[in-house]
Length: 246
Length: 269
Image 1 (tube, rainbow over the protein chains, first blue to last red):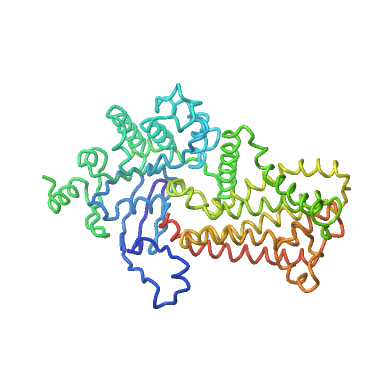
Image 2: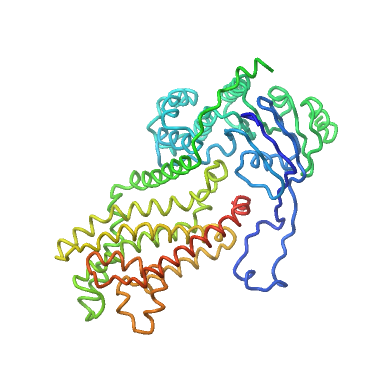
C-alpha cells in the first residue's frame, strides 16, 4: 500500500450497554447468576472501505451512529473487535487535541512534549517551533505555564502543533467548532494547504458547508453500518433526504 | 492525479519501533520529573524526605524505645538499604493503579505503545531511587558502616526490581480500570507487604518456619542483594533465586493480562 492509504475490512467494535464493563468485587465473587449480564451492542459493524492517498473523506451521520468511533479506530487509539484497519504511514489526529498538554509546564515544553509523543524528532520540532508559535499567535507566551492560557489559546496551540506533524493522514473530529471566527478561518486555510499538499483527510462534521468545501467522497454511517459510500454531494443529499435538514 | 502525486509529502524516514518506544518513554519520564521539580521549591528533598522520616521513626522506636534484636549494626544503614528500594516499589505500584485513568486524555489521542504508561512509572520512580543513593552514602559514612565488594550485586538488584515492578504494574493497571475497588485493595496490600517484607528486619530474623515462605516474597531476595553491600551475611541466594522466578512469573502474567485487556481498557477510559 502507498503512504497515506487506509484500508478497512469487516470492521466491528463491541460495547456493553449498561455503561461500562466496570464491576465491583461483589459482582466478581457473586456467582454467575447474580452477576449483571451486560447487554452488548455494536456501534460499528461490517464496515469496509479503501481510501487512496490524497483523498478527502467526509463522514456523515447523526449523533451516536459511530462516526467518532470510526475516527478513533483509524487513528488506532481504539482497537477493533472484528476486522482490520490498515493505515500506511503516520496519522495526525485532531481528536481531543488539548489532551496531552500539561498544566504546569511552559508552552515551550508542551510543544516539545506533544510533538515528540506524536513522533517528531527533536530536530524537526526545533525547525518548526517558530512556525507553530506564530500560527498559534502565542509569541509573547512561550515561557508562560500552559494553565495560564485562555481556553481559546489552548486550542490554538494544540491545533498549531498537530497540524504541523507532517504526517500523510489527517483526522479532524469537529475540533473546528471552537475558537473565534478569525482563527477558524485560519484553520480552514491550513487544512486546505495540507490537502493541496496531497494529504489524506478524514473529516467528521455536521456542517454541510464544511463537508462540501473539503471533501470529495462521503461515508454515510447509520446504526453502525456503512449505508452509502459515494461522492460527497450524493451522500449529503441522501442524509438530508433521510433526516431532513430543512 | 499526477500533480497531486508530485505534491504529496515525501515519505519521512520513520523511527524503528524500538526507537519510538525509547523516545516516548523518555519524554514522559522527563515530563513527570520536570513537573515534580518545577512545581515545588523543595523538589528533590521531598522524594527523600519520606524515607528519611520513616527511617528516623523506626530507628528511634527500635533502638531507643525497644531493645532491638533484629537487623544489623549500624541499624540506620540497615533500615535505609531496605527502605529506599521499598519507596521505589511502593511508589510505582500504587501509581500504576492510576496509570490509565489519570492519563486517559493523552492515551485517547496518541498511539505510542501502551505498555509505556506503566513503564514510565517504574522508570521515573527508579530514577528517584538512584537519586537517593547519595543520601544512603552519607549515612554509611556518618554511621561508620563498611562497603563490601558485594555492592556489585546492586547491578543485579536494580534490573531485577525494575522487571518485578513492571510485571506487577502491567497486571494491576488494566484490572483497576474494570474493578475500581482494586485501587484501595492495592493500598492495603502494600501496607501489609511493608511489614511482611524484610525492611525493618532481615530475612534471617524470621522464625525458622517462616523463613522458607518468606523467601517467596519476591522483594526478600532483592532486598538481600541491596543489603549485602554493607552486611554480606544478609545475602541469601535461595531468596534471590525465588525472587528471580517470581519476577519472571509476574512479568509473564502481567504481560498476558495487559495484552488480553488493552482492547477493553481503551474503550473504558
